[in-house]
Length: 242
Ligand SMILES: Nc1ncnc2c1ncn2[C@@H]1O[C@H](COP(=O)(O)OP(=O)(O)OP(=O)(O)O)[C@@H](O)[C@H]1O
Ligand SMILES: [Mg+2]
Image 1: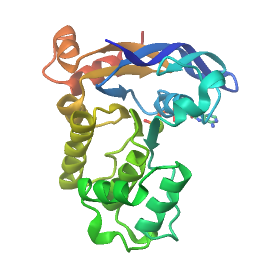
Image 2 (image 1 turned 135 degrees about the vertical axis):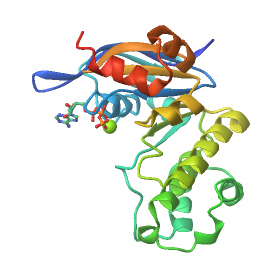
Image 3 (image 1 turned 45 degrees about the vertical axis):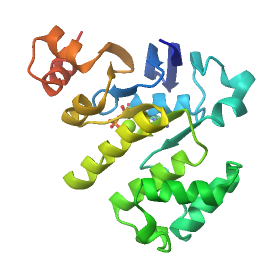
Image 4 (image 1 turned 120 degrees about the vertical axis):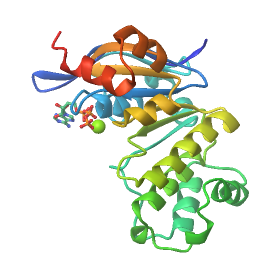
């Protein structure tokens, strides 16, 4: 199995306490991998380092086998992200946002690409709406549409299903699985919904206090910890002080 992401001894300190503390893991090509852990575990910090938005204190990140310092454009050209905390300009319509980001990414045949993605994510009905008027679920779909404009090989998603009603969350899960299966995209994403993670993740990585606690397929971990489901595995890991 090829590792699309390789992280070795990654550290990020804000002041004296490390938010990410000697973290090493790999993400296999073509998988949906869940980056899991309690509030404050270091998930968002890790995703931000994987996006080169913040610089690691130490450690190595290789994406597509390359490091940012020597291949920043090549890496960023083949990945994309969505985060509820990074919002798209609200004073543009949905269509204007897609055109703007598509041009920023240098997408060839932009109108055809947008047209295809708009159908894939079923957002045609609100293309003319101002982005600030969208509901959370509509914004999620717009964010995912934007994230696929450059035909990425890797998607990094921070809590893509947070704040969604059960119906829209279910549709979003279905979309993530379709993105993986039909477009062959590797997805690393964070979530606090263990039922969802069990349903769609091929592998999971548990972190706590910035350190790797365990990893494997959901089934492997459920068996290893002798539990019924991943929620109980989460509680076991999060409540074990070691
Ligand atoms: N810019 C920053 N300055 C100082 N401390 C920070 C900064 N960003 C994150 N932290 C701290 O780093 C730790 C990890 O935060 P992070 O946001 O990565 O956690 P998380 O796993 O994403 O949590 P959540 O599940 O709540 O989203 C926390 O203790 C947080 O307070
Ligand atoms: Mg977070």
